[in-house]
Image 1: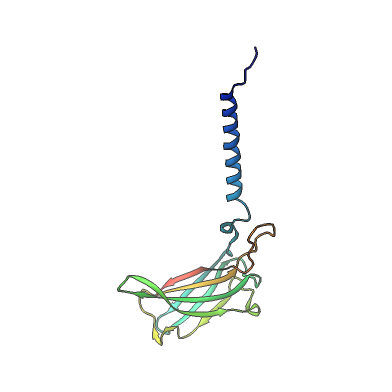
Image 2: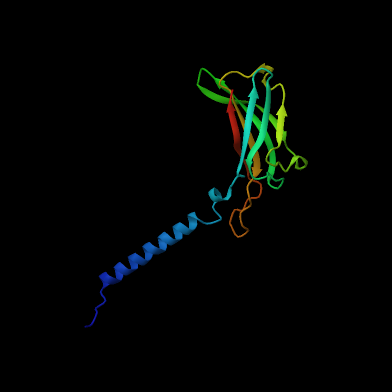
Length: 164
């Protein structure tokens, strides 16, 4: 039996090939290592943040996760978010640096940082204020073959928190 190739069959095969090619290209684009959204990966770290309201002292302890290396790490800070009763939201009002140079890194599990007299404009923290331990790191660079390669992108993410 002889198979007849018609323009309708050719159009169907061409449409299928174009659809498969499009799915392959779009999927490859979204999962490419050149995608900025895939490049940032923070350290797997958890820190305990404790605040003593009677003394105004704060302790941040590296609880679990990897040792935070000096490579790609800029600083470890505590950010104070003051509670605003009128809006029900929080506003960053103070930032205390705990570690900000390569000599203060690496930070291994079990290491503690202690601050005394944590205040907002010389006033003690109040109920509802939040304290966040924040790591500031540079993102890993994209591969050289990526267009619009960047080298100095910085990210901040919370690795511990508490509410006063």
